[in-house]
Image (tube, rainbow, N blue to C red; front, top):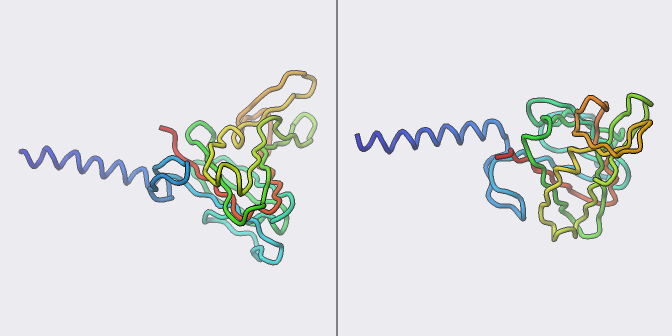
Length: 205
């Protein structure tokens, strides 16, 4: 009986860990330069010259290619899991990424590469009233190779929230991505030399 009591908890713990790893495809990781520890999904946004872009759009994996210098749009699609749907924004200016609705995860970011690069990432969408594009006010993420000593920082608010003044209003309104008041949510990345922007998605406790 003594052996049975020690074995059952061990089996239960193993099952829980396996379930977490199945839901979060990146394997369990220890502390990583300021980021939390635990299961997470990695997304690497690679700044590339036009001669180094993929020949065609691709899906799967965890890499999106963007312009090394210039604007690229990463369109967001809501889904049950994290997935790259279109990995090439350095050829036609747009890529596509699937992720769950906000509230079940946090997002952490850092830039790696030769010092000197910089960039800004902003959450944007289409205003169904006017058909125009609006981008978030006051939540733009500005990040470069020297920011925070290249340590990860929590950027959940910047990448899941869009703050704007609706047509006919004077009040700043903030909504989460995929809120039906706006359409076609995307991240607008103005890259000025960042080689690798790393995003990590961690499940909330």
